[in-house]
Length: 318
Image 1 (cartoon, rainbow, N blue to C red):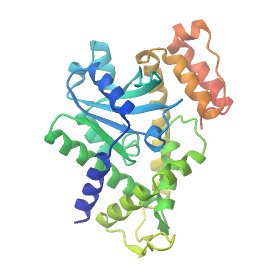
Image 2: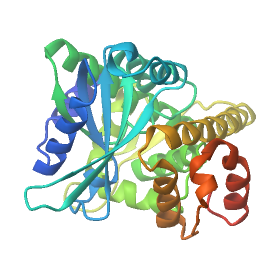
Image 3: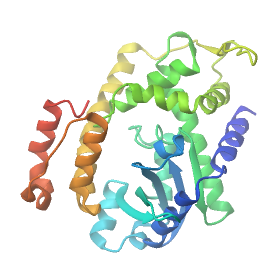
Image 4: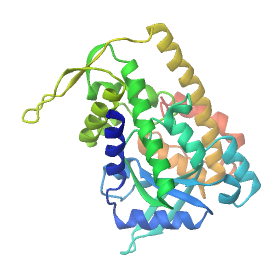
């Protein structure tokens, strides 16, 4: 019953309408790749209606990397360390630029990673958050995507509940969980990003928490009140040993930082103007300016170790 309630909640969420420029740039991204099964829209542009000076985040789910990529090298890189990330820019009906960063991932890898089959939270923590299904080839793919997103919500709620002690609210669960997952990547954002992420989607997270924890048999300590701003509370009865829990998240942080560096190096090749985009993104989120030399633009892999160290020393990454 609870599992069905969570899946129904996710199915309703992904079917909500989106702005026309988002749909248009998703269609443009699809045209670049063959055998696209589905396209998901998520991230900051979903939380904020204004697309100006923002980049739309998309996931293209494909049948296979061999048919989706133009070269064997790209397909091999995609298979070895999914996803590959690309940049796309179009214009809306009024001639204003619309920018997108889109990832290419096989439907099979997405189902495994988002559903909790990956130790690292790269996919399941992202897609426990709200998303929209912009394109879907058929009912069978829709069912697979919905099941993967439901699995992401359930698995992430389970991981969050393991971090809780005693009574806790939905807000405490998700903020604690996102703080941990942010530490597993080279993220430039400050801790206030967690507050923005939760508050912008509070109703969604409260509903997901209630349905997911019910399916996990985590009992409610107190019920929320529709007439007053009193959040529901839950009680964690059995917890993993704290030492084992801390060790698991330390391992995730070590693994995640390495994977983040490898993905950034890969993005320097898959993005048109990739090194400059990465410099812009770092400055936008951290305030740390990075001026690239012509040599660094031509040789991003050789330049990357020293640049990453300098940025880390200046506080660009946490």
